[in-house]
Image (cartoon, rainbow, N blue to C red):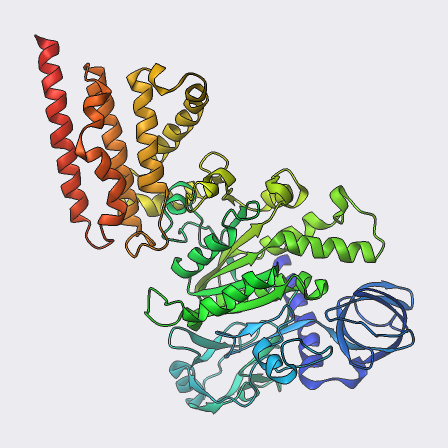
Length: 624
């Protein structure tokens, strides 16, 4: 009951926010005067009655800002735009509402900045460089959408039944793209009551009323939600289904669950962005949200130009039909960079509440943390380690805790998975952002510079990486192959042994090792080249289905076990390395297509015949 009361309070507070937004309450606007300017931090007097995190329009150009601290009659405002030229004495008008995202059909395929301004629209208005204070409708107010009401609800209301207007209830749907159906829901902050009207199938805009309740509430095709406030859920579920990415090193060795959290740390040039691009394209999430948070302009340009031309492997259509891009490059205002991840995760929760599985790519949280550090310094706060604010861990936790696999308010299942890139200076994983991130994520894909320099892609270190989701996804994988747990652990143990032997090899060379240990080195090379390494330009190898993944690893580990048995019987390692199957095992990943696994059975027969023949010959010698 306590949880239910807390949820009701949350809804009531959100309802006040919603009414202020929808009805543009003039009483909510509070006037103040700018007293001090320090970069993106502005102090204004006369705003003591405003609320924390309220949106403020500052100066003649009405630059968007947000109240981050209240001190008696003064407010500390962080502005999301360039405030060059602003003067002391300028107006600061509080709108009486927090920064909110508009949620409805039309989000998919759009490119936004950190505060949900449509960049393509702003480009047409002000050119390459956005003018301060420029505005743009978050969703096209004139576009007509084909609203299809829920037939069961329509029949009940027409029959005179009392239908309770429950938060999260699905009223109908709109075909947003060929890949995504946008479900029109009663907002979580609804006043409740009973439905009195449900709009028939018709052409609607985002401002159209699609339902009414007996409390006098009108439900629109779109609604607003504060970006810093998590959307309520029905129930949190165990993350027991993997997010299949098609990357063997991820899916087999370090799996991520739907609703899970992962970090990709690595120095410059190790492949963080490319790995996220591959996961975005191939993972089995329904909706992709890519947040370019403080990245270099050329990298973000590559994303903006490449994504519209990528083909969705599941539908054969454009990947943008299920993707939202949020772009905040390193030369854009730092305050917008700080809020961009909250905007992204709010959009993700909106589609999660429809029952979709959403994957967020945040690139990179280090640049986001640097924005926090700069804003904290401007506000003269006491710095913690390496100058970052003391609340850095709290902010990271707030972001990653909004991931999860949940039962929605309407009773369906959805999830938000968060994959955050971390860019530690000099590749130092002991720096604060990486260390604090590790506290709140359960999957760590550490990128290795030596692997990246050796053109090993993806350059995920099998020594430094880990995943705590292996136990949760174990039942799913065992349905596919009962040997998944044992083969995975056997391969990881083999790679760890090879790492220890590598030190000895560097000192005395491989020929000084006994054949048993040299076999470990040979098999490890097959695992690295024939399993862990993938060619993103090879049409066969760029994506690997789970069934092919586990069969490849089973073949390699069976080769190792049978070869070790032959060595025990006295067969020299040279006889094993001369077998054609040894080289073929490294090529199977590119020779066998995902739907032609019978070729793997042929390779298995070839391997068994050759090794069994070798084993019989030396077993006979032993008997003689």
